[in-house]
Length: 454
Image (cartoon, rainbow, N blue to C red; front, side):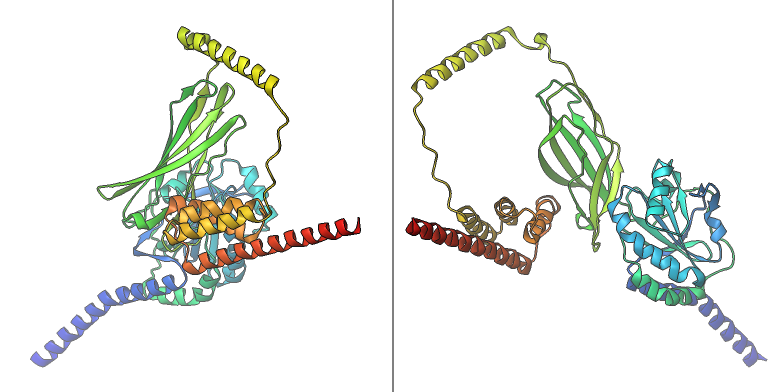
């Protein structure tokens, strides 16, 4: 009896260990498969927040209606370029796996439903698309930057996520393995949180946030103003490569320059962009919205977040704003300039135009200067010297396009091209110079031949 009691005790202990460790092992295996598919595992898995939103057909749909199926929930907007790039692979995923238990569900953050309808029809998308015009669901899921996708298991637990545009071809190939690996820890009961209640995400994956302000908010025509955009986030500065904000300037407002600075305080990272603006005419200039772009570590496509922009008020010129001595000085200088111009016109003689620059000389000097900047470790100088020289010859060439892509990322995002890429750009620039010099020599020979014939 004593031996039999001990056997029961050992079996009970083994059963308890199995119940405790089996879900942990399954979760670990699922994490590895998710990483192979390009997703970031959420550990521990967290309940998805249920919601009900209108769809583009005029009805309504709830997330919890998908209970028992896998759901790929993605947030997008029609103005978002990276979102558009992943739509074909999402459609292919929906077409391939809809009958295998996967639902692709997209939530639009656009304010206008008509734009979304046209967007979906033009791309022939057939998966469910819901309209979150007030941003209520996007806020609950932390979708301040898009595209953003969550993988939700059949019980309603969020097990993985993907920030930025994603090629879902790898996920399609691994879906059967994901579903079978997660089966050990699945449950038939619903884990969904109440309607639009904020989801609980692990620490360290919050996206950057931004705010914009004008200094000053009121100016006169011709006065400069600074648009200040502050981008901040928690964690390591290497978590994100922040790109310069995109500002669609209204007509009558021009950009005079951009500068950036960074700081870190108490584990909170901060990058401040100061964009110089100049208005020539009076009026109100709305800078809303602003697009903040950044690359999470390991991502190939940037995330895009829209933040509310300020309005610049340009007041009328007023003589009351000018001091009397300033008016007197201005009149005196104007008379002096006018007198100088009259004297200069009287003494003006026929001027000779400077000799034209030999074709290729400017590019040759730019290549030499860019190489010197590169040797000195100044990659920003390398790009800044070579880009305008090549743009003046062939603005649409592949090399010119590469240098344009590098310019802002090197200057503001800390991007460092590889030595192989830099060598390739230099070789292509020298090839352009070689062709240009050959064309010059050919022109000289033709000119000399015509002179002999005359």
